[in-house]
Length: 183
Image (tube, rainbow, N blue to C red; front, side, top):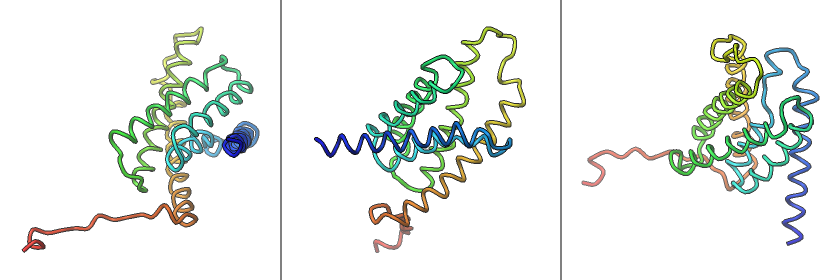
């Protein structure tokens, strides 16, 4: 029991550190680089390589700190991070059954798209100026394109690091069988 509490405490501190890096360092970078969503990448990485319960705890910690430091309404980041993780778990259970490199890339790209669309819809509904619809703004699409690019690169790097550092994760390839192998 005490070991589990320490694991959750350490995970909370690590996620809090990533939120601090996201808010204080990455957001102050020039335009293409400030679009990297480190918190989303870390949450998907935790879900993909660890488990769903730890990713929910991480989303709770990250969402709380992002809500504290952002100018959006409180609960905004909690809502979109939980919704994104629920969709990710559903996709992993129903559509993407193996834990391969292609699964991680498709999960990162689809969830980055979902995260940005959901955030824009919630901000559009909560805004006091409904005259500006986000789908017609070029800034939304360039931000989305940059975030998808950064998510792709993060998935590429993180999967290779995880495979190199863990004996449990090994990439596998399906064997190609022909009709004549059974004869």
